[in-house]
Length: 137
Ligand code: RTP
Ligand code: MG
Image (tube, rainbow, N blue to C red; front, top):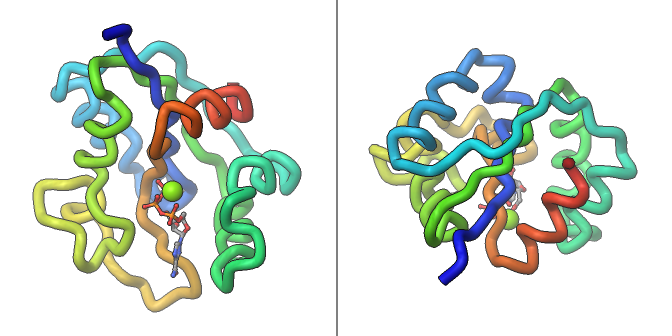
């Protein structure tokens, strides 16, 4: 099977809290390859494209506001089954219930805000990965 690629984002909360290095270290320790990396301050248009599947949901507007609150680090990551593997490293969407040992479980918590500030994004399928990588790189 060909090596997969995924889009990982260290979201604004992760960058602001100085967790980018810790998150990169976990990706590297797992054995995945960093293929490309950039700091991005996304405009609304880029985020509407990225989060198109969530348009109209109650958390959509707060999510876009959150994602425009500061820079994110976009990373092109490669490896066998990296899409599934990074989602496993990231842990569940809700940082309060994400398992300890995961990025969200170890570093995230519920801040009582309108949207889950859960430190990272990872593509959820090969189709999403191709679409999202084209949006951020
Ligand atoms: P991601 O796309 O960021 O990797 O996260 P995910 O698949 O685990 O979560 P998804 O359902 O795709 O939601 C995208 C992002 O929206 C925010 N969210 N907040 N009820 C809420 O407060 C809520 N639900 C979703 C999170 O930032 C989530 O990562
Ligand atoms: Mg998602």
